[in-house]
Length: 255
Image (cartoon, rainbow, N blue to C red; front, side, top):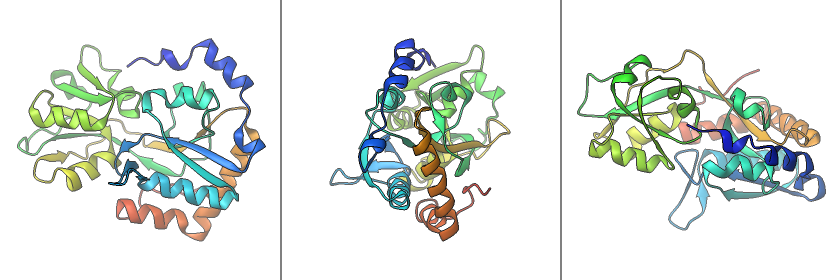
């Protein structure tokens, strides 16, 4: 896992110079991974659907602005934010590294990092240290990648998309996928029933908090987003979206 591309001085300089599009227009530009079910993914027509498009649409509505929702490759999404191409990433796990280049709203979801294995491996339920003896797949620049990167000597393969790592898991090229629990559960139960299994065992004791990432200088936008999230909790719209895509609202973070 390499984060250096996100911390180049040029990006910091561009962040200081970037002007929020929201400050000058009534459009809220949001970037998202276009292939991370059920958070955001394309339907047969090519339209991005999922929890995050619904969340971003409701967020924009509560802010009184128009939403421009864009698919952005995950490994380039923070640079896109820093360069002012987008105003926010509405679904991002908060980490100390990311705090160096982005400002975060209050958290609104919480999940764990867990593992997905083949269904024909019923006794494979690895904890973090167990991964050292396995071939592990992770998607680049994710919370899961940050967790397994701490394992010294582990056999880790990084992927640019979750679909690629799951295919390699099915083919036996890797033993396990380390992944955020929301995607792992959805993939195992909805996309590959009987073929893949989510272990449900957290790789770390701490919940991974999900927030809206923005540029540190966009103080007004940060305040508007926080206010809108409070309003979505109060009127039930956040719970409604969570239930639609996750089946319940257990992962919604309460103040």
